[in-house]
Every structure is written in C-alpha cells, then in structure tokens.
Image (tube, rainbow, N blue to C red):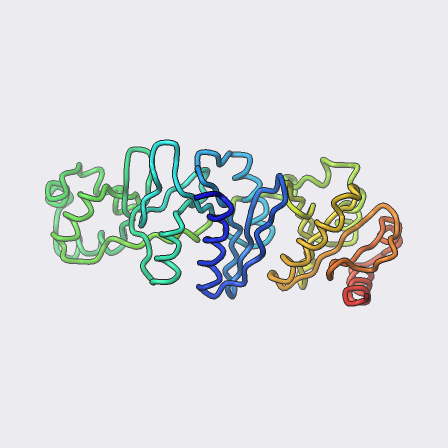
Length: 314
C-alpha cells in the first residue's frame, strides 16, 4: 500500500471514531502528516510505509510539538525492514508508540485494545503489578513458588511487581495460577512528556527571529517548533496561537491555510508575521501582521485585539 493510501486510511479510521481530523498535510519536510482531536485527546500522527525510516530527529521534533500542544505523538505504519507490523501489537521507536492501521481500527472502532508490546528481546505484556503483589501476599504465596510456576527467577517476579513487562508465556502461567486478570491492555496514546525547561526552547538560540523574541517579551509562552507549517506555538494561559513567520514569500499562503485548519481543530487561532504589511488582513482565517506592527505592541491584549479585528475580514 502506498503512503498516500496509508495516510487516507489512518484519517478515515480517526474520523470514523469521532475525531476532528485535519487534511493530509502534503507539505514537504514537515515532521507529521495528520492532526486529530477528540475532546481532550489530541494526536499528532506520522504515517510511514516502513517504520525503520522514522528517525530520532523526527521523533524529537514530534515530541517538541506534542509538548507544546498538549498532544500525543503517534506513528502508524505497515512494516519494518524485516517484517509486517502485526495486529494487536504496539511497537515503539524513541519512546513514541507505533501501530498498524489494523491495530488502530481495532482499538478505536471495535473497543479491542492491544495487549502486547514489542521491545528488545521479544514480545511482552503489561501486568497489573499492584494486583499481582496484593494477590500473592494475601494468599501467602512465596516469591519462589510463583517464580517456579512462571518459569522465571524470584528476582524477575519482584521486577514484575515493580512494573516491569513480562514475557507472554510467563504472564499467562501466572494469570492461570492466580485466576486473576493481571494482564492489562496497552494504551498507545499514553505519552509521558519529557521535561523541557525554558532553557531548552530555541528562541534565545535564534537571534534573527525578532517576532518570537517580541512575543516572549510581551508575556506569551513561546514554544519554537521545527519542520512544521508554523514556527512556534504561542500561549498566554487563555488562548493558543499557531505562529508562522513569513520570511519565504512563496510559502506564506500555503503555511497560512494549513495553520488555520490546525488551529481550528485545536480551538485556537493562527497568525502569520511577515516582514512587510500586506493588503490582506487574513489568509483563510490566519491573521497576517507585520514585524513593525508587533514591535509597537506593549501588552498581550494588543495582539489579541488585533487578531479579533482581522480574523474575519475579507
């Protein structure tokens, strides 16, 4: 299946599950293909035919954007270099979940979550470690007895009780012995945001980006992003603003249209800051303003007032 077809399939699954789904973002060089939202669940999705093409750089870019948007990064794929992705298994690269479209459809449309995850060394399942430990202790079962039943060491049982994943055969033997549902489903939408302090944000490392520095000076939280249709996610505690910089005249319209669509999904708005004032106040809902206008602003309200006045003008 070609990548465009894979993208359309992923979009169709998400839409059928009730997500508000962006168009396929056919912009060369960006780090994601789809943005989707259902209530408070926001997904940033990269679609690949071969998941081995997913690079660490791409993963870091998706994580940065996910942190800024309060979203979960996800990759859907068809195969790796060695095999086809199996249904019901969650793979991962660089701490980002990877699933096939079949697994995604089972989870979202059939309420059939995956129970197996792939990791170095093989396939594993997640155990309810609290239930496991409580059941063993309440029943007076020794570590040695349970270890012998599972075919593992006492130390391994202790690690299971501390949250480590278990080999499938061992987990099934423990579950049968205890007669308890200790194997838990895997949620591929779980994403643990990595601590990225203000010192990790790139505004101070890009002195040429006057607009982002000025937005930060006005009191906005500015999260620079790369390989995206916009250059930053800007927030003030009440609103979210996708911020594009219009230094490349040939791409302004395309970037503005895409940013507008994504901002609507995010219940936010979008602006494009350009070198010189343009005749149009907005492009498909993305407000257009100049560096000079931004330079004259003294407070966040100056910007939000301008946005409110220009968003719907023709």
